[in-house]
Image 1 (tube, each protein chain N blue to C red):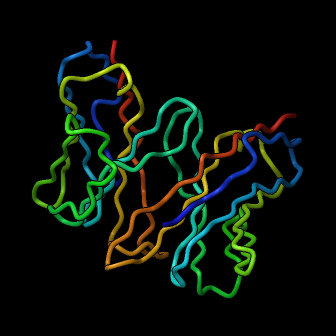
Image 2: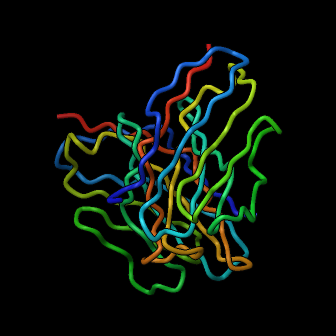
Length: 117
Length: 116
């Protein structure tokens, strides 16, 4: 696609429910990243995919968080048994390759705003 | 480990004036990339400018320029002729090539307000 697409754009869920956030990266981009941004804060790295594999999952805050990527394209971030502290904007980004150079700039989607009540 | 520091939580500038947003970084790697992103109230992260560690000239993109001082490990963003639409959060980021992959690290951001 023309840009990184994320869905849903807004999600309100009850505490304890599971949620799935979807990211469709720019066509041809092999690298995909998930970040979390709490209100007024910077970006917190969650997970990185190169193709379908995730070489770095170190940012996932707990075992309630998981992510997968299929076909080297779409990725899904799943949060199980949501807690109020999970409320944040979840940003997905993609780049053409693993090395950030002028040709591999990271492009972000508009984010999924998650509110846990 | 990589670290990005943005010491200015908020900046104010008058329309049509220039403004400098500070960014310092820390890495032991010789090969790295530096980025600036703009995040308006809509939430989208918009790529502004990139500087490679081996680039000898400062990067420029329209009204944006990156003042790269490698010895000081600083990568300040200069916005010339500020416009009201420049009001947003600005994030500095760094990526390091290590083992064939990298994770961009972001600073905490600077809120810029442009007033008439």
